Amino acid sequence: MALLSSKLRYLLLFYALFQGIQFGLRWKSYDISPKQFKTIAGKAAGAPTISQSMSTLTSGMKNYYGPIMPRHIEWHAIQLGGLSLRIYPMLTMFTEFAAAFSAPFPTSGRPGLHWANSTCTVLKGKVSRFNDDTQDESVDTFSSGMVFRHGQFESYVYDLEKDTFVACYGRGFLPISSTVHVTSGISLGEPLSVLKFYIAQVGNYWNALSHTLQTLFQHYKARAAGEL
Ligand SMILES: *[C@@H]1O[C@H](CO)[C@@H](O)[C@H](O)[C@H]1NC(C)=O
Image (cartoon, rainbow, N blue to C red; front, side, top):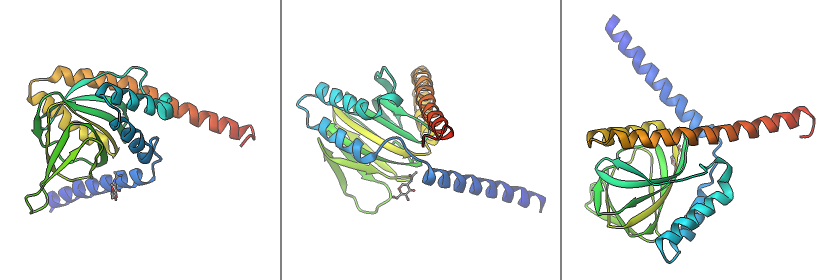
């Protein structure tokens, strides 16, 4: 009886936590507009070379979201469930991310289930994927300029052709998503690249957070002064 009730207590605690986060995600305000991101990524996909695509993407994002973006963005190594990719993190926060991914060589794998909805635009190359949740055997293929959505708790196997670049924006409870990144990196013997990535992200978190707090402070200061 005592055992059952303690198990029940954990279950209830997890349920309450899940509902609490779900509620928070629904009511939170977000910094990036998915529509604007898609427009910028679409423009980037139309550029003639990949270096022009990447600069269109970066400058387009900086136009709108400059203050919350890292001043200096660089490529990092990332392992996601067998996918050997590079990531170009334009924004990484607890509930939002915007990043480009590239596959310098053909790679396939299952990046796992995420508590986040992500939308990706193919900038160059080709992405194929197989949905694990459906019974049919069809494979979806997306080429340059096409958009695909990876919804929360959906599972796919992906295959990226050599020299594929995608730009993604996602919303959700992202600390959970870092578990696949961290465990994949460590299991492939790459703890240092994981560490390097998160050390860089800590600086970015702080930058974005301090901007948000500053805006909030200005808002309340103006309100207190009767200007709003
Ligand atoms: C993801 O999308 C679904 C369906 O549109 C929505 O119900 C859910 O709240 C979204 N999740 C997050 C974390 O935004």
